[in-house]
Image (cartoon, rainbow, N blue to C red; front, side):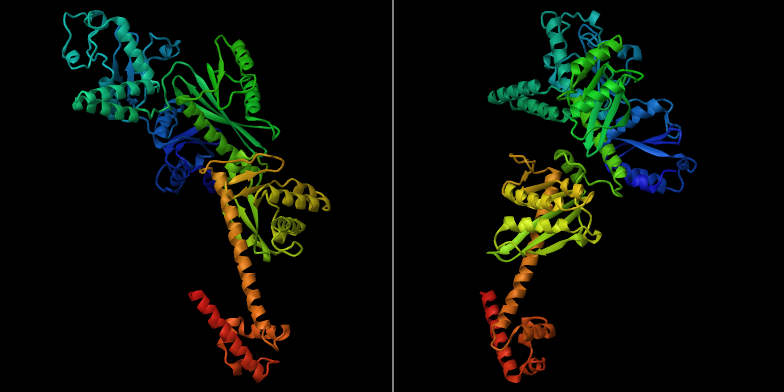
Length: 630
């Protein structure tokens, strides 16, 4: 049976999960808003499928954008895989579609649950083939869509066959502006009517701009003519267009078969995810891990994968759609075409439902790559999304699981200190925080101070100091980064292998606060991420935490020094007597609150000196309180 540890590493996203036994046979397919929680609920149950759960050896999954897409994908996969433990109705209820009967002389748009036969689906599509759009999860949604489209596009709704559509005068729908009246040749010809039908097809494929502009123009004209009721109809139609833009891409009924390819590179792990669509529905997905050099681009990865995978694949789809256009894609297309009797295209879509399918493939590739990275590098927890995004976009290897942030703090050069904070897998690790007193650098010289601190940090090779970081973040700009790099490399030169190579290869970046620019070594131009970029937000958290920790340490040091300097200013109180007073009374406030007799009990303090100390401390305390009140 699958272990709780394996379940804990499933994604917390909507999608479909497939439970299989040790032989690889799919036993159960389900949908979920949260895949991990849903699978956990299966194995937490004590009264459902008792004989089924012990057989589960693996749980595969497909991440989707939302629960509706997951529902449609589940329906498609259950019909395809026929898992034994899924509930399947004998009547095999199907989702509703909208059918545009372009095979008629005067096409219609209507609701149907009867899909074409497989032989019809594999035909090459042209302007005389009927089109199916959907599916729709609820029939009332499909009916509302159909009603709205009939208001926008005046196609005929009568059931008269096209060959018999010859009348002397149009019906009432023509008078109500809901039909072009193709039944009367003088009102509407075949060419004009088919042009409208093709506009409906174009709209249902997702091209709404032209239709929306036409409706907006008609609404404005109606309003100018004071026909407000008609303008309201156009307004409602425009609102309906907005709701129709959310097209579902899980089960689009189109004739050609397609594969959707996406690659994800996380450090030394490269994963390619493939989603297969056959006969208008998703038939499954696979993911593959490749051995490539870390500098290899996604275009090279996809090109090599296509060449190797489809040379032995049992079938080759009509289209291979990729997140990035592979190198030599034209040569690949010609080669694949030569392997079959049909033309094969290798393309990169830029809009529409195919782009949505590629987004789904990308999500799955990234998740499988992250899970493989976790297993390979011995991480117990799944990598934080911000760590993944930062590693991918900055091309870091390994992933920045452990980030150390450094900052300098002082006031006009007085009591300069430095901080080191640690984030592991996107979370603070306060047990590894460290404080530094600046020793060699002059007060106020932030560059030399940073150089000193970085050098001192990498001199610590003991395990108690914490393992080496995967990324070092410097608060500041390119100059601070340059001094930090010099210090790290200078220390590394005097270290022995393998510690020397490990220190040399630790990446460093700096984050400038004004524009939140990320500076990288040997790059003149900074990297700027969007405000919503998870990796940038993580760096900001590390920077702000290092700043807070450094300021706190500086204030504590400065406050302690102020107290000791005030005690030392009393005649007769030297370092030895000051130390005894602070040990006994803990602070200057404690000395001020003590009576002269109590102070005199301190070894080495006479009664007269105790009286002077008490008076001086109380005056200083009152002066400090008056200043704070002002």
